[in-house]
Image 1: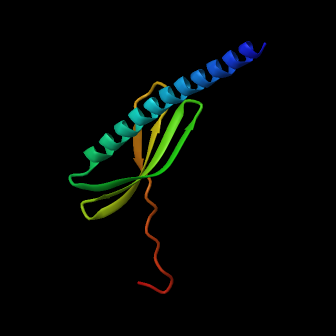
Image 2 (image 1 turned 120 degrees about the vertical axis):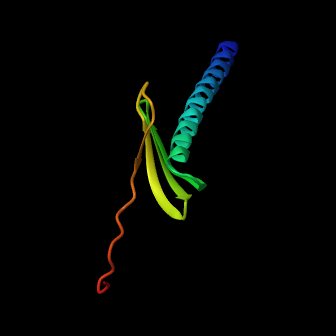
Length: 101
């Protein structure tokens, strides 16, 4: 009985490790694809910083802050199940300060 319990625990641990490794590989591929698409948008990218990451039900969303060409921008990259990545610029418009011109 103890041997059966031990083998069940070991098999569960092995399966969880394999699943986590596969999910990480997929996530890394999505991040690489998103970063390469952002690099294509600018001539001189200084920095791409990951600002947020979410994965639910096969849909992957990453938010990036980009510094390039003397500008700052925010991008959201979305990858739906079995689809190509899509990026969208998500900067907020600059707000005028009260009393300013």
